[in-house]
Image (cartoon, rainbow, N blue to C red):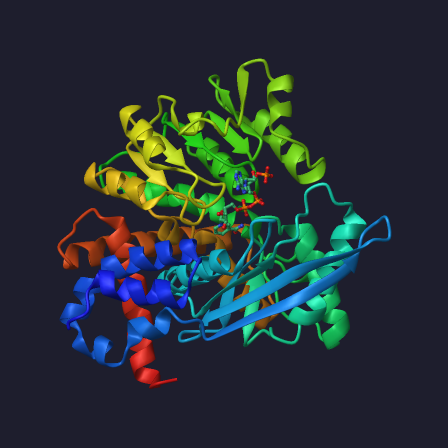
Length: 453
Ligand code: NDP
């Protein structure tokens, strides 16, 4: 019997039970690339799809450490080495209590196609732990990250696998992990990206994901001869990606009015300006406080705590032109997507990975708005990680302007490649299909070149 998307997905689901986010990510890609398989039977013959949905290697390990009260804690560590066809595995580490195998496999799978889109030679991977950095002292975070790296170090290397940050992993965590790697391996080398500027980091890396998501929105608007100037923008999250998305929106004359954390969100009708953004950065990066404190400081803002009884997130229910989901997966549900459209939003650029549920994605695509999926729109972060690797190999640093210009150029090529692939396969304006197809074809052709491995 000829295979179709449903029967292919039945196999994936049976082989990877309970990994719902992984099934969701695979199904979205498979739906987009099915017409490509019909055109290119050699991909089917070489079982490219079966191979790209199976990680090359999954590493899972115990992370024991001692907390400040002397109690032994045990977490679980992971590294998914998904695909190394076009370069060393590359992708972030996430520290969050929700982390499990299925979530990391979805992220690693997305990463393969995203990295392919960047035009840089990077394979795909992802890792992390169910460790929760929230409420932990700096010393506890250091002891945990050292324990985590004590196992991870034997699996990574500058030509093998180069992790970076993600949710719960920022400059502090990367610093502790780099220090531990250097001690264990007795080697100073670029095994992580997102490093500090004094020890091999790249300018613009912290900014890159948020900036890139805004550049992508600007690229999409350019196709309609429009800019971000004067546009009202909804942003979720208040971490690394959200902060720099807000910064770039301000640079380009837009008006961001929201941000959030897992406790709730603020709506600031007057707009989040540079002074208020500086407050958010200090609050989140130094004081490690909650976004509710923003509304205590600025009277123009209203704070709304999360209400789990609601069937939607009220953050997405304000009048606006653009939306930048920058918190986490599946944070925009079908009701939220409907609310966004009803409120006039016609640009959605995803800073987070897979923040919109499939029904929401379908609504955006059917409404023919400018919808940039995370795989394309948030690729700026890993792109500058790739540039950090290049600088480490050259033992040389580019200026801020040079890196920003390259980031700009990469986001534009991702945009244009997505548009071209969507056109070629008969779905003009559909960036979901475009990004999935453009990312996939390069991986598939490379896997053909390299034989059955
Ligand atoms: P951070 O840890 O810096 O910030 C995450 C933000 O999202 C915080 O405000 C956090 O709130 C909120 N958040 C996290 N989980 C949840 C949840 N389950 N429910 C509600 N809010 C939540 O992470 P980043 O900014 O680095 O990452 C944000 C998103 O961007 C993720 O999807 C990540 O995979 C993606 N991404 C990140 C890249 C990077 O370079 N950092 C690159 C590409 C994609 P709280 O503090 O309360 O937990």
